[in-house]
Length: 357
Figure 1 (cartoon, rainbow, N blue to C red):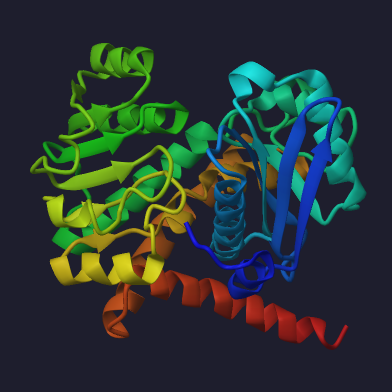
Figure 2: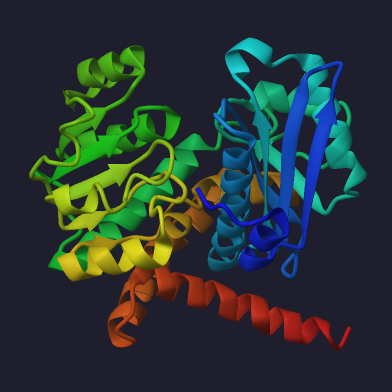
């Protein structure tokens, strides 16, 4: 957590706009962060989470929205980066009225921000939001939407993992590779399914006992406790829960050679922790690069949804991952910095073109 003032935080990460949303009657407390709209309207999911402090919610939404800018840019989408968070326990306070009140705030942005699902909300919640604003994506299939983005996110992570392994070892095969998956939610479970089909040896941890039991039974994953996940000798660590798990406390414990997962903001500090991994000889596949499958699927919905087209776009993540890792090697920098540079280059080039419009 950073202790800088609000405006210092916003300016340091380069945001265009931050909206604080409050409604006493429904109990809504939310923040919408718009990072960059050079490439198009900002798009990013709505996270419903029980933050301990409001400052933590602000810190999270600022980092997540910035990551969405890089994610959409690297994926070649005509979208900017945005994100929203609702503060509170979704299991206790989420109601139709609260979601529709949030949607009113989205509508007031006149299309500058498009919302979608994230942790704590699902495609059916998007239906309520759609009642008050058309600036929403990730609607159910029966409404002409793209449905659950999780399979697409997991597929992108899987492809990024294979590409990084190919770069590292010369082979993309995951057979008999030991993979630690932290988080067996939707994305984690779909990733585990793909790893199982490739005969990987899967270790998994999740705070949800039901999720854990399911993947152990269905995919022969090996359950481990939270204290073990950073100390296991394995090939790959795949964070698929909340961010910040790669940090000064965990990096010294890691006994893997590759990190590739679906969580956002896996590095607690992208510069410090990225360099620490590099010094330890661990290859890091940037999260906003390989977990872009979900936003790619949602973007396809905005164009007129086609599942085959969505999967075809997700498959580009493989080549982009190789490009980023090679760029990092050639320029003697970290994969995180190389990926940000590539994303920023595209944004700057389009910004220059727009000057003449």
